[in-house]
Image (tube, rainbow, N blue to C red):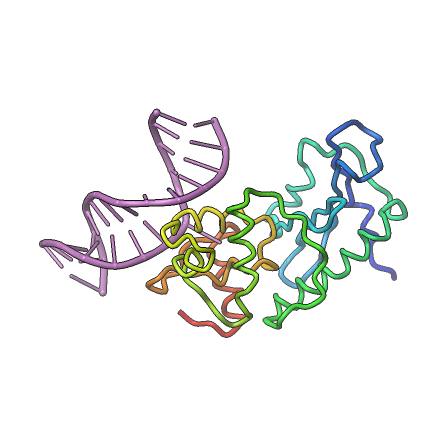
Length: 194
DNA sequence: TCCGTATTGAACT
DNA sequence: AGTTCAATACGGA
C-alpha cells in the first residue's frame, strides 16, 4: 500500500486571486509526518517560510483564511518538492537529536532585528545552549535582551531554527512558542539537562 | 504613544 | 531560595 499522497493536504495560499499558480506571491503548505505528529511546512517561491508544530485537534494551519485552492500533487513545483524532502529529513534529524544538514533555502520574513537574531540562533550547535543575553551580545545589541525573547517567539521556523536552545540566564527554561513541553522534549533529545 | 514580552541582575525578604 | 522591581529594546495596535 502506498502512502497517502500529500495532495490531501497540499494547499496554495495566494495573495492575489484563486487560480494564481505562479507561486510568486502565494505559498504552499505540505505535511510532514513524524513520530511526534504531523508538522506542516509552508513554502514561498524563495524557500521554506514557515514550520508549524502538530496541531492537537487537527491541521489548523491548513484552515487559514487565505487558503484559496487545493493543489494536486503533480502541480507542486519540483523545486518545492525538493525543498520539502530536505525539510522533512532535517526535521526528523533534529527530532532524533542528531545534527541536521542539507537545509532547504529559508525565506525568513521579519525585521532586520529579527533576522539577525534568527541568524544567531542558527549558530547554536546541537547539544549547546545560549541565554537570551548571550544572543543579544552576539548580535551587537547587549541591552536588547527582552527583544531577543520577542524575536525568538516570532521565529517562523522552530526546531530547524533552534530557538529551543535558548534558555534564560539562570538556566530556567524561559518560554517556547510551541509550548514548554516541546522545548524540554527537544532539549532532552539533544542530551541537555537543566 | 502605549502596552506586553520566551530577560536580567540586584536588592530585598 | 523565592519575590519584587526597575531598566530596557522592540513590535503591534
